[in-house]
Image (cartoon, rainbow, N blue to C red; front, side, top):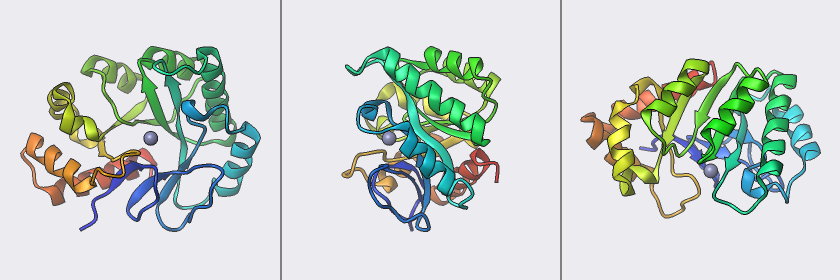
Length: 215
Ligand SMILES: [Zn+2]
């Protein structure tokens, strides 16, 4: 069985694919998101993104803008990252997109501040979530927020401890850009932590993703 993978950088069925804006992809194969990642703000321009979003915004598999955000662990200037993130939140507001997939490394408060300032009211999927329950509560107080977990469930005891505390109706699982990580391995670990079987968890995460999309 193919488990639902909520965030992946190479396209497969039953997943949400993070499109590389300059490469071809098949919009009918899986859900997909379009955005400028904070690691790639030098390589992509907002005009290209805007035209792609306008082209695909009504496609049944379009799952919003992402992955976008702020990463304080990289060299790329913070101000530039903030500028790109803000522009993409504004774009979501302008076009009426209600789902954002967020990349945050030590930047949750920057991100929340911008979302508030821009009056964003849609839902959020924070991928590869590694913070704590308090930060999640702050998000959830302001936005309908889903958390996606992947490799950290396998290699971080902090994530292992956090994961069972999150409302089951808000969790999604992913492999991100790790081609060697099989999504079934993430489900195996997650169900072990939740004392649940894989099929049931797959039904839950699939439904959660639909809810994130308001469908
Ligand atoms: Zn990613």
